[in-house]
Image (cartoon, rainbow, N blue to C red; front, side):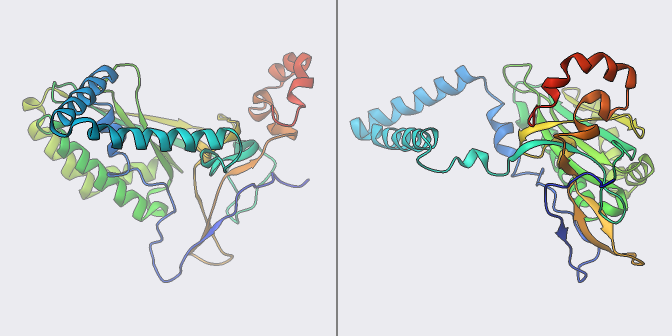
Length: 303
């Protein structure tokens, strides 16, 4: 039986640059700085601040101060109307995989089998929050971000050594402003994560935190670790950009070689077969039997 059908091309690596960094999306500043700044004030505070600046500019420049605002709003409105009317390409679809797909671990040679969730994975959450009126400008908080960024760079620079498959940054939305920021890491095994935890770059951060924690009670940090066994995880995405567990890169070595040859995306076609429903992806026969009443729905190509 043929294995799962991969939907995204692999990325070859250069033999001239060991260790080879994986092509992960960037999660360190300045890539995540603007959403964090935006979250420091409530929407009403941003509107009031904008109104104040506009009022000052009107006092200084008169009606001419409205021209930049009018021009930018006109451009953005026209731009989005053209996309909505299909007169220009919809750039929000860039990177979207127009199908139903699932993330499945490839074999060591980069091919895919027929067994869902064929490998165990580790999911690690690392989060922080400033419980201070100054938000990210609070004493000590920038140092937390700087150390986190350095550790992320070290992980991404040698992902094979540390078992890193991918990572993504998330911003909590439960409060009006000043929410938690969290990075989700996906790794091959806990031993590699434990190895990194005892590297000097992490231990330096631990020692720093132990020295300042009493003077900075407004800084929250936390982590969660989940060791997920084979066959104990499932996922499905429809018309989505690769995200979460589907935004990973698995290292592949050539036959008889120790060096990484390429990185393979785990995105595979999930429109039929064992990937068609959650019960099948988890091999829960009793639940699969209960769901046969809706089998016609799951047989549709995109659902």
